[in-house]
Length: 487
Image (tube, rainbow, N blue to C red; front, side, top):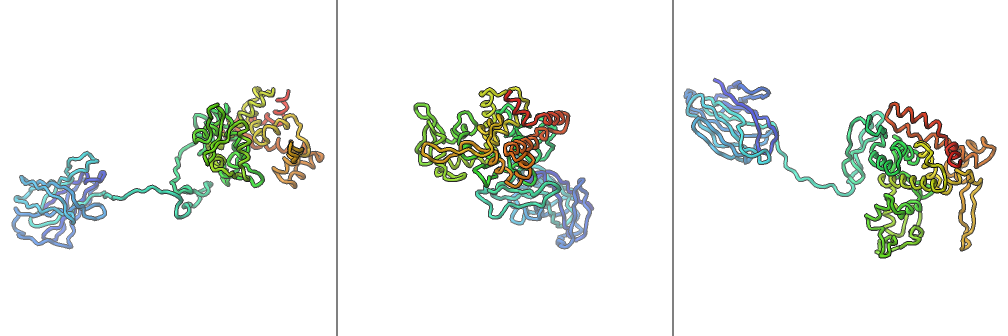
C-alpha cells in the first residue's frame, strides 16, 4: 500500500516555500512515501488513529493540518481540496486544520490547493497531492518558510548604549557598526584600484567624492588635493583623516585646520562653496541695495561693509560665538564636505592672488602648485608671501593700533617654528645646525616637511603614473619652487 505527496509552491506571504508532510495511519505502522527530489516525508507512529474498518479498502478519512517551518499552525489559510468528484473549500482553524476528507474508492488522491498571497499575484496553487490509505489518518502539511509580522521603527537620537565595537581584524583597527547617533554604518566592499581617476585613498576612500569635487573646483588632479589634505589633517592610528580634530594652541579646527577668522573669511567671500552653504541656510543674503548681510539668531542683521570684521566681534573664545547662527557656521568645520571644499577654494584663491601679484604660478606643475597651496594654507597668504620673498624676520614684529593697543604686525621665524615643533626640538634639530638662525632653521624645517608630506604619488594606484609622479616630486624642492616664483 502506498501514499504519495508531491511538494511545490507557497502559502500566503511566504516566498518559495518547501512543503513536506507526515501521515499517521490508523494501524500506527510506518509507511514510506514517495516524494519529489529534496523533500523528506515521514509518518510518525506515536499516535495511531482508530480505524473504523481495517478490512474496508474502499473507505478512508483524511484529516489535513497545515503548519509553518517552525511547527506553528497556519491559521486562516484558504484551502481547496479535490478528491475524485468531490471538491471541498475550507479555511484552517486555530490548529491549522480543515474538515476531514472521506474517500470512496481505493486509489483516489487528494489534490491540495492553497490561496496565494496578493503580493505574489493572488489566485491559488496546488502545493501537494496525497493518496490516502484505508482507514483514518492525519496528514501534516508543512511549509519550509514562515512569516513574521513586526513593526519597524525609526531609531532617533543617541543609542542607549555605546556603539558595538568588533574585534579588530588584521590591520583594520576597530570596526564600529553604528554612528554616534545610532544610525547603521554602511560600507561597500571591493577593489579601490584600478579606477578612472587612478586615485588611491586607502582608509580615506570614504572622502573620495569630496576630494574629486574639490579637485574639479581647484583645477588640480585629485592626488594633489589628497596630498594637501593628508599634510594638513590630524589622523587616527590607521591614517584616516580626523574630522573632529582641534588645536590646543589656536582656534584651528576640523580636518583642514581653519582658524575661526579664516573660516568666517571664506564664508563671506562670494563664490565659495561655504558661502553658497550660508546662502542656502539663510544666514547670508543681500539687502535691497545688494549688500551682503548675515542674519543672526535673533533675526537681526549684520551688514557690509566690514561684515567679516563685525562677525569676528561675535567670537567669545576659540570656536565659540555669542550668536547661534555663527556657531553653526563655525561648526561646519567638523564636516568633511565643507572642510575639504573650503580648503581647496582657499588654496585656489591664494594661487590666483599670487598670480595677480606677478608671481609665475602658471609655470608650476601640479606637484609644485600643491606645495605652494599647502605653504599658503599653513602660513596664511601674508606670511607665505614673506616666505617666498625670504623676508620673515627672526622675531615677531609688534606695533600699536589707533587705540594704542599692542598688536602683532608680522610673525617671526622663532614663533612660527616653536609653534609647530616646540622649543627643544627646534633648537636641537634646526637652529644649531643653521648657525643659530631662526630664519634658516624655519626654512629648513618647512622645506623638509613639505617635501615629506606633499607627495601626490602616494595617492596614485600602483603603476606607471605613480612612478612618474614620484620622480617629479624629487625635483620639486620647496625652496627651489619659491625661488622660481620670484624670477
